[in-house]
Length: 306
Ligand code: SF4
Ligand code: SF4
Image (tube, rainbow, N blue to C red; front, side, top):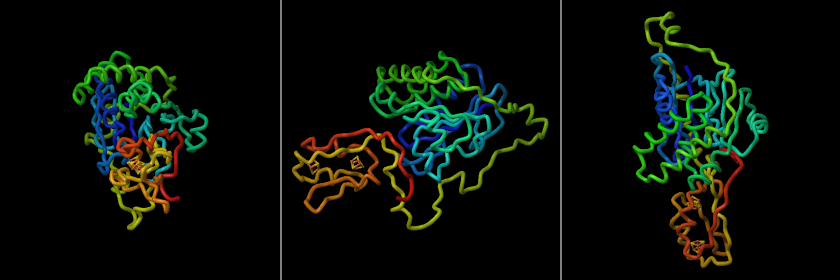
């Protein structure tokens, strides 16, 4: 059995990625399970999703505490001590990281002992879809690592997206992007212990459900009064960029920012609190004078504390 865990940010599509992978596996003739685990339902909040794939009926349920494969859809999660995407990863397993770093750089930066693959999935999403939604792309790389077929991946993307979008062109772009990602990585050899249900049955007739302690398996508040230490701007794809030449100080951007993170300096000009700006770019859309532009963030930043 392959146990795959996706880690992403709310809005990136981790849940859909796990469903694309599970559906592709089913279409390739395997038993499959896929399901998400949400914390706070907020754009940018950490989200995990899991897929189990097996040649035998799957008797396990619940979160995957010891994955064979981890797909990290947002690099900044690797620095978040409350998320810990690679926790429990089996020796001989694989972690794929969405990053601009090389495999060697990522392995060294994040001190990962398992096999590391890297791909700038965000850039592919921006280039091919025009937006940083990575669901089908992450599903594509996972399908390649697991060893599924292109045909089943294509059919799975079409089936899953047909349930949530009606734009035919966007659906076709997602198929192309998923296949691009599928072919963009070189599959690594996975050295895993194969545990079929036959093995489990020999041990016990009772189904064993994996279980994590509450502080691991659910969102937790570990200390009170720590909200200001949590920098919600650590995960954005774009940041607003200022050019004050045309700013009229109308303050529309200040009023429209949903996170209240545009402040005003002593000269009366607005500026961004980049520690907490989530990169939604509403301010860019709303500015009547085009004072605000956008720049891509490419480097991981600290998740907690300054
Ligand atoms: S992108 Fe603009 S509107 Fe969005 S959170 Fe950042 S400053 Fe606020
Ligand atoms: S909306 Fe544009 S013009 Fe108005 S204060 Fe903000 S940046 Fe300046």
